[in-house]
Image (cartoon, rainbow, N blue to C red; front, side, top):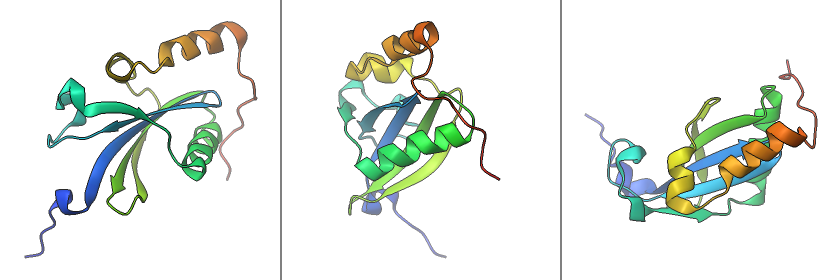
Length: 123
């Protein structure tokens, strides 16, 4: 039977929240099955690599959305592996734990509108 120890390859889990054309990212170092169960002190704001930032904004735009939360596993080599896109993903806990101003950016987007117009998904 083939088994894999996720901790042998996983450095941390990342939650990337896209609001319009802005990106907010948090690293979550945990041993829990669900990162929402990780202790508060295991969350920190991070800056993803430029290509990840661009890809996340383009992906959300391709979906025709202005908001989404994307989950990644970052391996010990620093490679980012996307797990899923949550088009209504939770942001409040990440904001509370890291101080990232996600809700302020959502409010700005609601009041002022997007700085770029979203497009439909490419076919």
